[in-house]
Length: 347
Ligand SMILES: Nc1nc2c(ncn2[C@@H]2O[C@H](COP(=O)(O)OP(=O)(O)O)[C@@H](O)[C@H]2O)c(=O)[nH]1
Ligand SMILES: [Mg+2]
Image 1 (cartoon, rainbow, N blue to C red):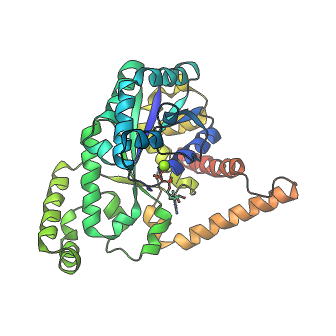
Image 2 (cartoon, rainbow, N blue to C red):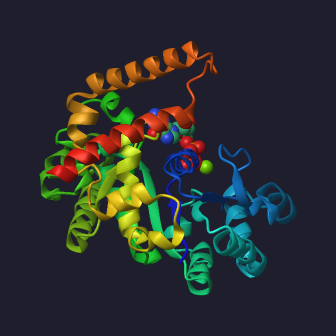
Image 3 (cartoon, rainbow, N blue to C red):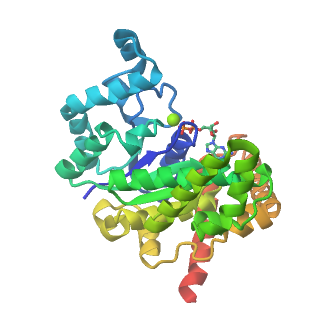
Protein backbone atom coordinates (compact mmCIF):
# COMPACT_ATOMS: atom_id res chain seq x y z
CA UNK A 1 0.00 0.00 0.00
CA UNK A 2 1.63 3.30 -1.09
CA UNK A 3 1.81 6.31 1.23
CA UNK A 4 2.34 9.98 0.43
CA UNK A 5 2.33 13.54 1.69
CA UNK A 6 0.71 16.38 -0.22
CA UNK A 7 2.55 19.57 0.72
CA UNK A 8 0.44 22.71 0.32
CA UNK A 9 0.50 26.28 1.63
CA UNK A 10 0.69 29.88 0.40
CA UNK A 11 3.66 30.97 -1.77
CA UNK A 12 6.85 31.34 0.24
CA UNK A 13 5.58 29.30 3.19
CA UNK A 14 8.52 26.90 2.80
CA UNK A 15 7.04 24.00 0.80
CA UNK A 16 9.98 23.27 -1.51
CA UNK A 17 12.46 23.68 1.33
CA UNK A 18 10.39 21.26 3.41
CA UNK A 19 10.26 18.71 0.56
CA UNK A 20 14.04 18.88 0.36
CA UNK A 21 14.21 18.40 4.15
CA UNK A 22 11.90 15.37 3.84
CA UNK A 23 14.11 13.87 1.18
CA UNK A 24 17.15 14.10 3.49
CA UNK A 25 15.23 12.98 6.55
CA UNK A 26 13.82 9.84 4.91
CA UNK A 27 17.23 9.07 3.50
CA UNK A 28 18.66 9.23 7.03
CA UNK A 29 16.08 6.87 8.56
CA UNK A 30 16.29 4.45 5.62
CA UNK A 31 12.85 5.04 4.10
CA UNK A 32 12.94 5.02 0.33
CA UNK A 33 11.25 8.25 -0.76
CA UNK A 34 10.82 10.36 -3.88
CA UNK A 35 9.69 13.95 -4.36
CA UNK A 36 7.22 14.86 -7.11
CA UNK A 37 7.01 18.47 -8.29
CA UNK A 38 3.40 19.51 -8.89
CA UNK A 39 4.14 23.21 -9.41
CA UNK A 40 4.44 24.19 -13.10
CA UNK A 41 6.14 27.43 -12.00
CA UNK A 42 8.87 25.69 -9.98
CA UNK A 43 11.92 26.03 -12.18
CA UNK A 44 14.65 25.76 -9.53
CA UNK A 45 14.08 22.71 -7.41
CA UNK A 46 16.24 22.26 -4.30
CA UNK A 47 15.65 18.47 -4.24
CA UNK A 48 16.23 15.59 -6.67
CA UNK A 49 12.88 15.28 -8.40
CA UNK A 50 11.51 11.89 -9.53
CA UNK A 51 8.53 13.12 -11.54
CA UNK A 52 8.23 16.75 -12.61
CA UNK A 53 4.95 18.24 -13.76
CA UNK A 54 7.07 20.58 -15.90
CA UNK A 55 7.85 17.63 -18.16
CA UNK A 56 4.17 17.72 -19.06
CA UNK A 57 3.47 21.39 -18.94
CA UNK A 58 5.37 24.59 -18.18
CA UNK A 59 3.89 27.83 -16.98
CA UNK A 60 5.96 30.09 -19.25
CA UNK A 61 4.69 28.36 -22.41
CA UNK A 62 1.08 28.54 -21.28
CA UNK A 63 1.32 32.18 -20.34
CA UNK A 64 2.69 32.95 -23.77
CA UNK A 65 0.32 30.73 -25.76
CA UNK A 66 -2.84 31.68 -23.89
CA UNK A 67 -1.88 35.27 -23.13
CA UNK A 68 -2.40 34.71 -19.42
CA UNK A 69 -0.72 36.08 -16.31
CA UNK A 70 0.99 33.84 -13.75
CA UNK A 71 -2.15 33.00 -11.73
CA UNK A 72 -4.43 32.40 -14.70
CA UNK A 73 -1.63 30.46 -16.36
CA UNK A 74 -1.25 28.21 -13.36
CA UNK A 75 -4.97 27.44 -13.23
CA UNK A 76 -4.91 26.65 -16.94
CA UNK A 77 -1.84 24.43 -16.48
CA UNK A 78 -3.43 22.39 -13.71
CA UNK A 79 -6.66 22.07 -15.69
CA UNK A 80 -4.85 20.83 -18.78
CA UNK A 81 -2.98 18.29 -16.71
CA UNK A 82 -6.30 17.13 -15.34
CA UNK A 83 -7.27 16.25 -18.92
CA UNK A 84 -4.06 14.40 -19.82
CA UNK A 85 -3.61 12.85 -16.45
CA UNK A 86 -3.13 9.20 -17.42
CA UNK A 87 0.50 9.44 -18.46
CA UNK A 88 1.33 11.32 -15.28
CA UNK A 89 -0.37 8.70 -13.12
CA UNK A 90 1.49 5.96 -14.97
CA UNK A 91 4.79 7.51 -13.87
CA UNK A 92 3.58 7.77 -10.30
CA UNK A 93 2.44 4.17 -10.51
CA UNK A 94 5.89 2.97 -11.46
CA UNK A 95 7.39 4.92 -8.52
CA UNK A 96 5.08 3.36 -5.96
CA UNK A 97 4.69 -0.13 -7.41
CA UNK A 98 8.11 -0.89 -8.84
CA UNK A 99 10.31 1.32 -6.68
CA UNK A 100 8.07 1.05 -3.61
CA UNK A 101 8.75 4.70 -2.91
CA UNK A 102 7.11 6.88 -0.27
CA UNK A 103 6.06 10.04 -2.10
CA UNK A 104 6.14 13.73 -1.25
CA UNK A 105 4.19 16.07 -3.57
CA UNK A 106 5.41 19.68 -3.73
CA UNK A 107 2.32 21.68 -4.74
CA UNK A 108 1.76 25.19 -6.13
CA UNK A 109 1.06 27.99 -3.66
CA UNK A 110 -2.16 29.38 -5.14
CA UNK A 111 -4.61 28.81 -2.29
CA UNK A 112 -7.66 28.65 -4.56
CA UNK A 113 -6.37 25.25 -5.70
CA UNK A 114 -7.09 23.94 -2.23
CA UNK A 115 -10.10 26.00 -1.23
CA UNK A 116 -12.50 25.98 -4.19
CA UNK A 117 -10.83 24.81 -7.40
CA UNK A 118 -11.21 21.10 -8.02
CA UNK A 119 -8.55 20.21 -10.63
CA UNK A 120 -5.54 19.46 -8.48
CA UNK A 121 -7.72 17.87 -5.90
CA UNK A 122 -9.25 15.50 -8.45
CA UNK A 123 -5.76 14.37 -9.53
CA UNK A 124 -5.04 13.21 -5.99
CA UNK A 125 -8.46 11.59 -5.69
CA UNK A 126 -7.72 9.68 -8.88
CA UNK A 127 -4.42 8.42 -7.46
CA UNK A 128 -6.19 7.45 -4.26
CA UNK A 129 -8.68 5.41 -6.23
CA UNK A 130 -6.42 3.85 -8.85
CA UNK A 131 -3.29 3.24 -6.79
CA UNK A 132 -4.89 2.80 -3.36
CA UNK A 133 -2.64 5.60 -2.17
CA UNK A 134 -2.84 6.80 1.47
CA UNK A 135 -2.37 10.55 1.71
CA UNK A 136 -1.72 13.12 4.38
CA UNK A 137 -2.04 16.79 3.47
CA UNK A 138 0.69 18.90 5.08
CA UNK A 139 -0.44 22.52 5.08
CA UNK A 140 2.47 24.89 5.74
CA UNK A 141 1.65 28.39 7.01
CA UNK A 142 4.30 30.98 7.80
CA UNK A 143 4.32 31.55 11.56
CA UNK A 144 4.43 35.29 10.88
CA UNK A 145 0.62 35.16 10.67
CA UNK A 146 0.51 34.42 14.38
CA UNK A 147 1.68 37.95 15.11
CA UNK A 148 -1.56 39.67 14.03
CA UNK A 149 -4.83 38.43 15.60
CA UNK A 150 -6.95 39.14 12.53
CA UNK A 151 -4.48 37.43 10.21
CA UNK A 152 -4.32 34.50 12.60
CA UNK A 153 -8.12 34.15 12.36
CA UNK A 154 -7.91 34.39 8.55
CA UNK A 155 -5.40 31.56 8.29
CA UNK A 156 -7.55 29.44 10.59
CA UNK A 157 -10.39 29.90 8.11
CA UNK A 158 -8.08 29.08 5.22
CA UNK A 159 -6.88 25.92 6.96
CA UNK A 160 -10.44 24.89 7.78
CA UNK A 161 -11.57 25.49 4.20
CA UNK A 162 -8.87 23.32 2.69
CA UNK A 163 -9.44 20.62 5.32
CA UNK A 164 -13.12 20.45 4.35
CA UNK A 165 -12.44 20.68 0.62
CA UNK A 166 -9.63 18.10 0.42
CA UNK A 167 -11.34 15.60 2.70
CA UNK A 168 -8.08 13.80 3.53
CA UNK A 169 -6.05 13.47 6.74
CA UNK A 170 -4.67 16.96 7.26
CA UNK A 171 -1.81 18.35 9.35
CA UNK A 172 -1.46 22.13 9.61
CA UNK A 173 2.03 23.39 10.35
CA UNK A 174 3.41 26.77 11.40
CA UNK A 175 6.60 26.91 9.35
CA UNK A 176 9.79 28.93 10.00
CA UNK A 177 9.11 28.77 13.72
CA UNK A 178 12.75 29.73 14.31
CA UNK A 179 11.77 33.26 13.17
CA UNK A 180 8.82 33.72 15.53
CA UNK A 181 10.67 35.17 18.50
CA UNK A 182 12.25 37.84 16.34
CA UNK A 183 8.78 39.20 15.44
CA UNK A 184 8.25 40.39 19.02
CA UNK A 185 6.36 39.15 22.05
CA UNK A 186 2.97 37.45 21.64
CA UNK A 187 0.16 38.00 24.15
CA UNK A 188 -0.27 34.22 24.68
CA UNK A 189 1.86 31.12 24.95
CA UNK A 190 2.74 29.32 21.74
CA UNK A 191 0.42 26.38 22.50
CA UNK A 192 -2.51 28.79 22.64
CA UNK A 193 -1.99 29.39 18.92
CA UNK A 194 -1.04 25.86 17.90
CA UNK A 195 -3.90 24.20 19.78
CA UNK A 196 -6.34 26.95 18.72
CA UNK A 197 -7.59 27.38 22.28
CA UNK A 198 -10.50 29.62 23.30
CA UNK A 199 -10.52 32.30 20.61
CA UNK A 200 -12.59 34.65 22.76
CA UNK A 201 -9.36 35.71 24.46
CA UNK A 202 -8.29 37.30 21.19
CA UNK A 203 -11.26 39.65 21.10
CA UNK A 204 -9.67 42.69 22.77
CA UNK A 205 -6.64 42.33 20.49
CA UNK A 206 -8.81 42.15 17.38
CA UNK A 207 -10.72 45.23 18.50
CA UNK A 208 -7.51 47.10 19.10
CA UNK A 209 -6.25 46.16 15.65
CA UNK A 210 -9.66 47.07 14.14
CA UNK A 211 -9.70 50.58 15.50
CA UNK A 212 -6.14 51.31 14.48
CA UNK A 213 -5.76 49.66 11.10
CA UNK A 214 -8.78 48.08 9.59
CA UNK A 215 -12.03 49.63 10.71
CA UNK A 216 -14.96 48.37 12.77
CA UNK A 217 -16.65 46.30 10.05
CA UNK A 218 -13.51 44.27 9.53
CA UNK A 219 -13.21 43.39 13.18
CA UNK A 220 -16.87 42.35 13.21
CA UNK A 221 -16.23 40.06 10.23
CA UNK A 222 -13.19 38.63 12.00
CA UNK A 223 -15.32 37.93 15.07
CA UNK A 224 -17.85 36.04 12.95
CA UNK A 225 -15.15 33.97 11.28
CA UNK A 226 -13.73 33.27 14.72
CA UNK A 227 -17.06 31.80 15.83
CA UNK A 228 -17.30 29.68 12.71
CA UNK A 229 -13.80 28.24 13.21
CA UNK A 230 -14.53 27.53 16.89
CA UNK A 231 -17.77 25.76 15.99
CA UNK A 232 -15.97 23.30 13.70
CA UNK A 233 -13.26 22.70 16.31
CA UNK A 234 -11.04 20.98 13.74
CA UNK A 235 -8.00 23.17 13.27
CA UNK A 236 -4.73 22.75 15.17
CA UNK A 237 -1.05 23.14 14.27
CA UNK A 238 2.35 21.52 14.55
CA UNK A 239 5.48 23.66 14.30
CA UNK A 240 8.53 23.32 12.05
CA UNK A 241 11.93 24.80 11.48
CA UNK A 242 13.48 22.75 8.67
CA UNK A 243 16.99 23.06 10.04
CA UNK A 244 15.94 21.85 13.47
CA UNK A 245 16.13 18.07 13.49
CA UNK A 246 13.94 17.61 16.53
CA UNK A 247 11.01 19.53 15.04
CA UNK A 248 11.33 17.47 11.85
CA UNK A 249 11.34 14.17 13.76
CA UNK A 250 8.30 15.27 15.74
CA UNK A 251 6.38 16.37 12.65
CA UNK A 252 7.09 13.17 10.72
CA UNK A 253 5.86 11.14 13.69
CA UNK A 254 2.55 13.03 13.59
CA UNK A 255 2.22 12.60 9.80
CA UNK A 256 2.96 8.86 9.96
CA UNK A 257 0.06 8.49 12.34
CA UNK A 258 -2.26 10.62 10.21
CA UNK A 259 -1.83 8.74 6.91
CA UNK A 260 -1.59 5.38 8.64
CA UNK A 261 2.03 4.73 7.64
CA UNK A 262 2.90 3.40 11.08
CA UNK A 263 0.28 0.68 10.67
CA UNK A 264 1.31 -0.39 7.18
CA UNK A 265 5.02 0.34 7.27
CA UNK A 266 6.12 -3.29 7.21
CA UNK A 267 4.95 -3.42 3.59
CA UNK A 268 7.05 -0.37 2.77
CA UNK A 269 10.10 -1.38 4.79
CA UNK A 270 13.53 0.12 5.18
CA UNK A 271 12.93 2.15 8.33
CA UNK A 272 12.30 -0.50 10.96
CA UNK A 273 13.76 1.34 13.95
CA UNK A 274 11.74 4.43 13.17
CA UNK A 275 8.51 2.52 12.49
CA UNK A 276 8.84 0.46 15.68
CA UNK A 277 9.43 3.57 17.78
CA UNK A 278 6.42 5.30 16.22
CA UNK A 279 4.21 2.34 16.93
CA UNK A 280 5.38 2.29 20.54
CA UNK A 281 4.46 5.98 20.75
CA UNK A 282 7.99 6.86 21.82
CA UNK A 283 8.38 9.85 19.53
CA UNK A 284 9.36 12.87 21.56
CA UNK A 285 6.48 12.70 23.97
CA UNK A 286 7.94 15.69 25.77
CA UNK A 287 8.62 18.11 22.93
CA UNK A 288 7.92 21.48 24.60
CA UNK A 289 7.51 24.10 21.87
CA UNK A 290 7.18 27.09 24.20
CA UNK A 291 10.46 26.13 25.89
CA UNK A 292 12.29 25.41 22.60
CA UNK A 293 11.12 28.35 20.48
CA UNK A 294 10.35 31.14 22.99
CA UNK A 295 11.48 30.77 26.61
CA UNK A 296 14.91 29.21 26.07
CA UNK A 297 15.41 29.59 22.34
CA UNK A 298 18.88 31.13 22.60
CA UNK A 299 20.12 28.34 24.86
CA UNK A 300 18.92 25.63 22.47
CA UNK A 301 20.23 27.49 19.42
CA UNK A 302 23.61 27.77 21.10
CA UNK A 303 23.63 24.04 21.87
CA UNK A 304 22.80 23.26 18.26
CA UNK A 305 25.54 25.58 17.08
CA UNK A 306 28.05 23.90 19.41
CA UNK A 307 27.06 20.46 18.16
CA UNK A 308 27.57 21.64 14.59
CA UNK A 309 30.95 23.14 15.42
CA UNK A 310 32.07 19.93 17.16
CA UNK A 311 31.00 17.89 14.17
CA UNK A 312 32.87 20.23 11.85
CA UNK A 313 35.99 19.88 13.97
CA UNK A 314 35.72 16.12 13.98
CA UNK A 315 35.36 16.10 10.21
CA UNK A 316 38.33 18.40 9.79
CA UNK A 317 40.40 16.09 11.97
CA UNK A 318 39.44 13.22 9.76
CA UNK A 319 40.28 15.34 6.74
CA UNK A 320 36.76 15.00 5.46
CA UNK A 321 34.87 17.69 3.56
CA UNK A 322 35.13 21.09 5.23
CA UNK A 323 31.42 21.78 5.05
CA UNK A 324 29.35 19.96 7.66
CA UNK A 325 27.83 17.03 5.94
CA UNK A 326 24.03 16.85 6.14
CA UNK A 327 24.18 13.06 6.47
CA UNK A 328 26.46 13.21 9.51
CA UNK A 329 24.21 15.81 11.12
CA UNK A 330 21.22 13.55 10.68
CA UNK A 331 23.14 10.58 12.01
CA UNK A 332 23.91 12.49 15.22
CA UNK A 333 20.35 13.78 15.58
CA UNK A 334 18.91 10.32 15.18
CA UNK A 335 21.40 8.83 17.62
CA UNK A 336 20.26 11.36 20.20
CA UNK A 337 16.66 10.62 19.40
CA UNK A 338 17.22 6.89 19.93
CA UNK A 339 18.85 7.58 23.28
CA UNK A 340 15.85 9.68 24.32
CA UNK A 341 13.53 7.04 23.06
CA UNK A 342 15.40 4.44 25.16
CA UNK A 343 14.59 6.34 28.33
CA UNK A 344 10.98 6.61 27.21
CA UNK A 345 10.77 2.86 26.78
CA UNK A 346 12.07 2.29 30.30
CA UNK A 347 9.47 4.70 31.67
N1 LIG B 1 14.09 30.75 8.77
C1 LIG B 1 13.53 29.81 8.00
N2 LIG B 1 13.38 30.01 6.68
C2 LIG B 1 12.79 29.04 5.93
C3 LIG B 1 12.34 27.83 6.51
N3 LIG B 1 11.78 27.08 5.51
C4 LIG B 1 11.89 27.81 4.37
N4 LIG B 1 12.50 28.99 4.61
C5 LIG B 1 12.79 30.07 3.62
O1 LIG B 1 11.57 30.57 3.10
C6 LIG B 1 11.73 30.95 1.73
C7 LIG B 1 10.66 30.32 0.86
O2 LIG B 1 10.84 28.93 0.86
P1 LIG B 1 10.31 27.99 -0.32
O3 LIG B 1 10.59 26.59 0.10
O4 LIG B 1 10.82 28.42 -1.63
O5 LIG B 1 8.74 28.29 -0.26
P2 LIG B 1 7.56 27.77 -1.24
O6 LIG B 1 7.23 28.89 -2.13
O7 LIG B 1 6.43 27.47 -0.30
O8 LIG B 1 8.07 26.55 -1.94
C8 LIG B 1 13.14 30.53 1.34
O9 LIG B 1 13.96 31.66 1.39
C9 LIG B 1 13.54 29.53 2.41
O10 LIG B 1 14.92 29.51 2.66
C10 LIG B 1 12.53 27.63 7.92
O11 LIG B 1 12.15 26.61 8.53
N5 LIG B 1 13.13 28.66 8.62
MG1 LIG C 1 8.15 26.10 -4.03
